Length: 241
Image (cartoon, rainbow, N blue to C red; front, side, top):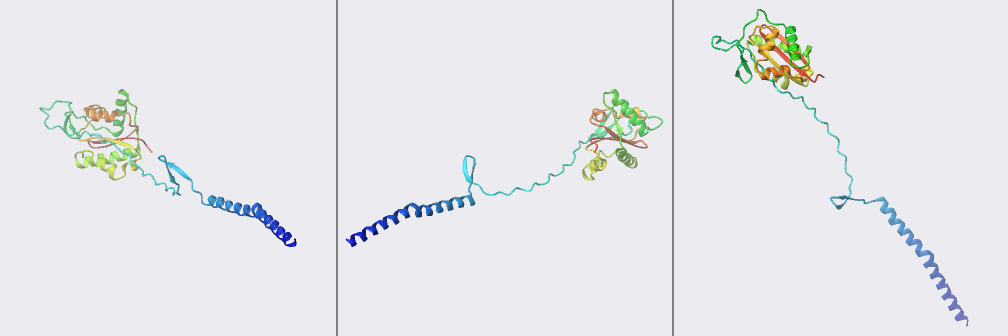
C-alpha cells in the first residue's frame, strides 16, 4: 500500500513539473529568442528601394562634391572695318561710291575737307546721325577712348589699317573684354580721309551696309573715338561692368 502511495506521489510531482515547465520555463526562452531577432533586425536594417521597377538593396552613397562652373569668356562678333584709302584712279572712279577691295576693306572717291575732325566733332556727328535714324545717343567712355586712340596712333604710324587683326587679338588673347570692362565690342576705322565729322560719319561710314549698321546698332551704349592725322577709330561697347 505504501509503495502504491509513493508511486502516486511521484507521478503527481512529474505532472506538476511538466506543467510548470510547459507553462513558464519554455515561453521565457521563446520570448528571449524572439526579442533577440527583432533587435538584430533593427541594428542592421535592409531597406529595399525601387529602380526601374526592380528591387535592389540600398547601399550608402557618397554625395559628390560640387565642381566649380568655369567662367565663360564673353564672346564678340567682329564687325567689318572700312579701310578708307585715297582713291588714286580719280579720273575714272565714281564719286561717293564705296568699292570693296578686300574682306574688310572699302575705298571711296571723295573730296577732302580743309581740316580733320576732332574726336568730339565725330562724336557729335555720330550721335546726331543716330538720332536721325531712330537710334539712341552713345556716351563717351574713357577706357574705350584710350583704346581707340591707341588704335588710331597705330594706323597713323603704319599708314594703313590691319583688317581688325589688332582688335581681335586684343580681345581674344590679351583679356581685352575685362581690361575695358565690356561684354560686347565692335570697331569702325578709316585712314586717309581728311574730313569733318559729318562727312566722316555720313559719307565714309554710311557708304556701305555693314559699317552703317555698326554705327547705328541699338545694342551699343558707349563709344570711344581716337584721331591721329587722317587715321581714326571708333570702338563701340555694351554690357559695361
